[in-house]
Image (cartoon, rainbow, N blue to C red):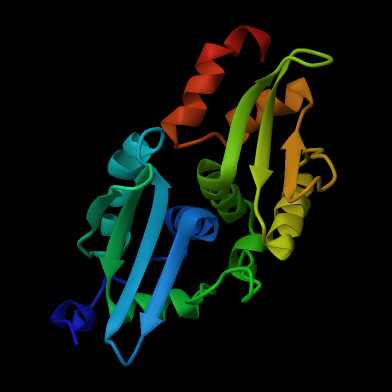
Length: 214
């Protein structure tokens, strides 16, 4: 077994930072646990071009500061992917205790944990983490010209919860359309940027680019 897997971790509080980490893990994260091989690892995968700044300047320090572990970044040669990894058996055990499980997120029906759902101050950063990873911001030119915020995920339970969470936060997302929901009302697009916001620069840039129409 890798000695790093036996190292202790810092146990963080259930605060806004941990809630945002849970959100980004539910989005583009993965937890791998193999006792026989002695491999315990978390991984966040993003686009190596559009998400590089997000990985280096936000995800990396977030993980390191939360858990006191080292992270490792590698780029995939065959496709535009960048991975950030951290390995620790104690980290996997802790994540399991707060509602994140190893393996296939869809088969495991992973959802926003109840300790986050019940508190808006935690739900907001968790939603931010989800939209930073699996969200999109684009300028709609058909029908009426408008900036649209979307969220797409193949986990139907999680998608349903995200929609219900947005409603709880006074938004009016669309119904689920082919594994996606959208915020289309101009006032609510602006409200999302002000109330929830983004930590992924690629999304922030869309609001700067199209600020006159938001």
